[in-house]
Image 1 (cartoon, helix red, strand yellow):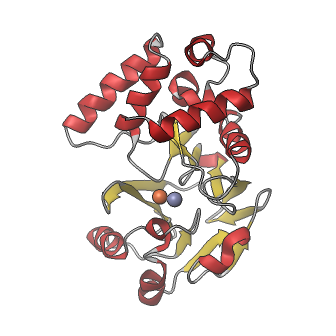
Image 2 (cartoon, helix red, strand yellow):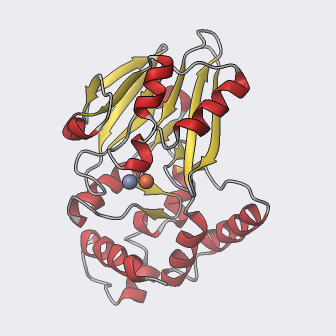
Length: 257
Ligand code: ZN
Ligand code: FE
């Protein structure tokens, strides 16, 4: 297996851009295309040519750059079959359970309905990396716009089943505000408190807080911790199902200030 370089950067206001560059073949994939101009700048600075875009979902801040980048590079665009009509330039449609090979590496597609109905996530076992789009964030999860909160719960749960060392790449730098909510519902979680302090330090230095890892999220992200006695007590939901606790957390987060 040849080396893969991961290059992550900020664009728009709080979106992550992410480029994967195969050092041997020269192939370069963008995970989503939030900002064509910034992605081109990052590619040019490294002398890379974009060959693929892997789209997680149809929102404008994830597909805005598709057509401009495809025009310049002729890159192929892979995206969710379930919302293919809303993905500009899509030429390969995928859905949960599909596997494909990118530059000799297996990519597994997970269906993640909730934020949007067709949202997919890409998992690369050989790189111990998952590209979660707007489904799972560090210390939080995406808002439920199109699906049901039950669907979102199932989508988020899938991440908890990935190998713990898997690096979590997500669509937005929301970690600091997510940390405030997480601490409000689980103030006694020492791992969370440490992560929140680290996040404050990183943000004060203008640094990114991701990628995270699945093990770090399992220890601190309330949306993966619906079984936590402290969270349940805080919500007055000691005897409720995980699904109901998740729904209550998502609801409270929506109005949390
Ligand atoms: Zn979105
Ligand atoms: Fe987004």
